[in-house]
Image: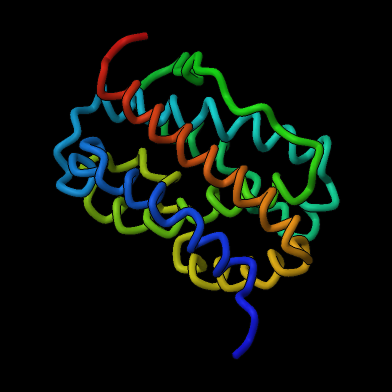
Length: 192
């Protein structure tokens, strides 16, 4: 039997956190397309609060990873800006604390795993949500989605070469899931 791949280790180790996020009340509203526009804007602002700094950190501190994974994976904040502009000017990222980005490549690969995984579920939401013109983030790579995902998976094995690398990636991925769960709580709360 072959040893598990980095993706298999990440998926197994984060399955509880992923399931928790999938069961969040906000996710139910998204899946049923019953999210009010103001909550959707808050959600986009919350995503922007994470993706903007993450992309900037990756581009400045980990250009080697950006090149390996493909620079197109680090443009999600542009999608979010496009979506937010649909709701008017001056829609800025939410003022939420983000994880302490690491200079460790394995940890940043773990964050990237969560970021890329979010595009998989997002494609289903893009078909349901009632916000035409504001679905770039969820539509993500469009018809190239599966090609992009399949291209990403082997790159994880190139970056995460041993169990210590995988452990650091898993820790980062879990913290990303926890952050998104907290951000979903913030969206639902309506508090600035």
